[in-house]
Length: 291
Image (cartoon, rainbow, N blue to C red; front, side, top):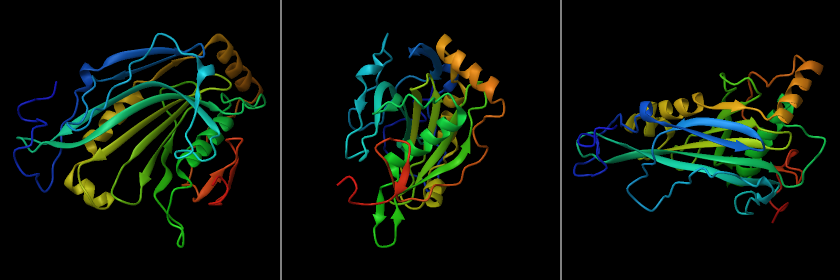
């Protein structure tokens, strides 16, 4: 448990020039388990502890989910509207400075199930290459069109950064970060794990530090290490037990193509870019395509 006296949300003093804030104690995090498309997914997360402003409510895991009722992404978030989502879990955690210097930032965790708006029977997300294509296309559909300066092609975001797999999982997986290039830092971890031929469990873990400036300037004011440790701990706690059908699919993929695996590295994508209505094909950017 955080020392609520030394590290309080109550702000009575000016923020220090630099600070290493304290957030939730992960050693007391509880286990969360959910069955999605027959696959069991488990992870650990601390108790909800939102920022002192607004009314950010947590989303608790339900007993069951009908993935057939997934919702199409809104046009303002994803112009192609090529992916559907099912919301599963959301929590937010505050990080505070010492001795009443108050709130210093927060990290949130959102778990969704994503699937193509138009299903494609030829696509099997359990195949590592298909998962890789899907993860890059999905992040492009959501962020690749967000141009800061049309004349220069300056982007709001860059991704993927720090590309890797989730090392403790035996099933294919992809994780990487996105970085905000304009208006301060907002690192976000994206984790993609297939749970069936047509469904992917998607974790989004976003951090906001209470400081302004470039990424380096923000990090000098508010140490990013405690936030990163929480993100790494949550991702490191993820466990997956595939459904019998998904396990059979994965076994067949390994049998017929034993060398199939997610790429070890991946350079940042060339944005701006759009995604086709199929959800998987990355296209040259056209601001009028989905206008």
